[in-house]
Length: 190
Image (cartoon, rainbow, N blue to C red; front, side):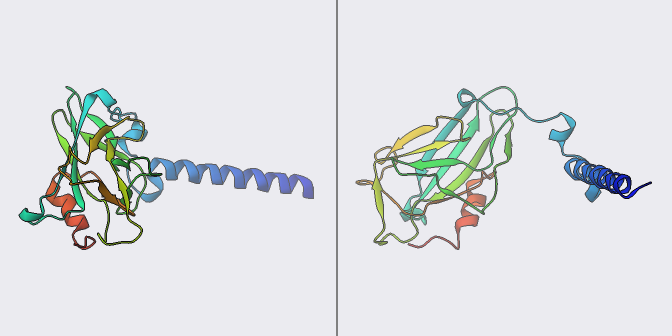
């Protein structure tokens, strides 16, 4: 075989090996794990916006809460399990961008059985006296970025005046509000 033929055979072998590694990695077999249910065709369907109910309330400071934390929830009102995004989409008035996830991470499914809820805690602002504070009249909460979400005004949330916001964060959906609060516990300032 000449040099050109050897080089072409080497490239084909390398390409085939790379394709095999990528295929094994995608299926989870490379790490010795079974493929994820989604890879086996058993993915839970995404919840449609009309299948979920979204709620938001302030955390009462007199009950040990913080004036800059909201509890939000998403409830599956359909008769079948479905998935929302594991990171709630929380936006503030006309400001750009949603609350950042805590912990930082990428989108993924959060499966809700019929009638079950996911709960999250949203910190609207860390330092209530921050000079960068923005004031908004409302927030929108959605179970997934593609959902229009539900709008909550400052009045709906029993907030005097306007909602204070700067560098907001939201937990991922959790099975309880207590679990969501635990995530923010060391990050919230009064």
